[in-house]
Image (cartoon, rainbow, N blue to C red):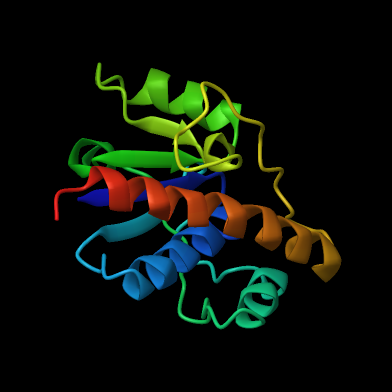
Length: 158
């Protein structure tokens, strides 16, 4: 299985989510699930935001080596699940990469539990914010990712 995590710049939210998801999948014996991240803005080669790096380091997730990259049609075509941060991303991907498949989710659809809710709220972009905002976003995304991992444990073949 391949999961693609998408935000705007691939500098804050999507690398935070993707690296934490990899961390959790490894701890749950699901390291065969491939996780990558990309951004809709097409920014390539930028490091993760310093505040994102620091916030995630506090929970033993390393973003130091992350470099941003723009999303491509191949990313969408090769993914079994796409996790986006806000409604704009859902809309943009539907227009840019129509597939007819129902495999795109807002991260916060997993906020209340392992079964995705029919809708979810946006995870706001913390770019340019102070570290405290990144820490709050980290805690929200951790809850969502933990529920997503439970969802995957129950739906993926053993």
